[in-house]
Length: 355
Image 1 (tube, helix red, strand yellow):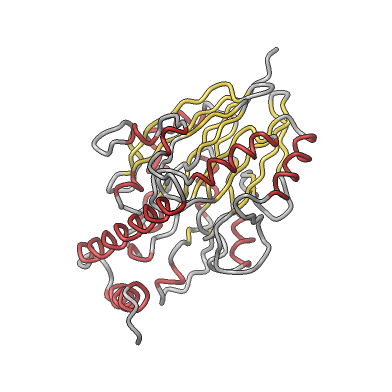
Image 2 (cartoon, rainbow, N blue to C red; image 1 turned 45 degrees about the vertical axis):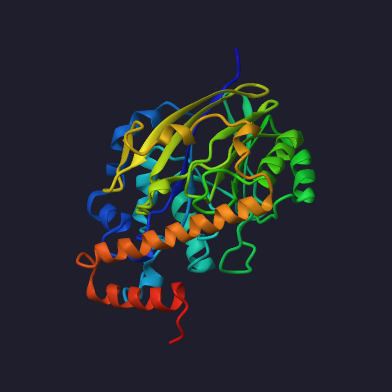
């Protein structure tokens, strides 16, 4: 009998209200309606796979002081863990630059909530996750290249091009049939990876990684096959109240791993609506160009690091302009204390004025 496992991969699960959406974001809507409402159109896909993966971008903790936008942002409720499990998620990465935004206590509380609901957490420091399924030994590991808010070693961190990590992967491959690597890397709002990411992905696959699942950019970045492996450079957002157009184009990646290689990949294009609900199809956002297979020819836009840095700079500027416009549009919806703190935030943190 042929050995196979199936995996459905989605991107960032941002289950707290963003700083400019306190009271009107994903968290606020999910507390009223539950998380399932965001997934209603695609729930059948979750039932057809052995593994359902996402990136847990934020904490699940109900100890939330209600007097600061900074203590409320990037926080979901602990009740969301059971809801994620009921939807079908069973593997989540906790190696990213927001999981420790509220400290180690909330990090470990989040891990405990998820694992108590049967969800495996990958990325915890020095703890690869082994799962035997359908006769195949699968090893999940999560790492982050992006710097975060602390110097703690709660989760795995590497640098892009890390040769020691390549050696580690080579040894790890002797213990399993497949390594699935979740990696938080790249730059935000850029719709192609850097040439350095492309090269490092090749090195990782040649060392023994079967599947690389990237995230952090909040944008889809296509995928690329190399040898027996596959890299999805960025899965984009999955659940988010980030309404910046490139961040609303998303998708799910349905992947089949056989005995020795990635055998199939199918992309399910999705859009995040203005109500934060996932909708099928290409619609008006042009998702199709961000969910296609990539080749080196697709990276001609960034011929060198200077070109890529310029693209990153432009993307950040566009996003900041969007945030200011969105803030003005949402003024009538926000509570007064939120509006007051946001004005202070934009004046002193974003524009650079001194109080």
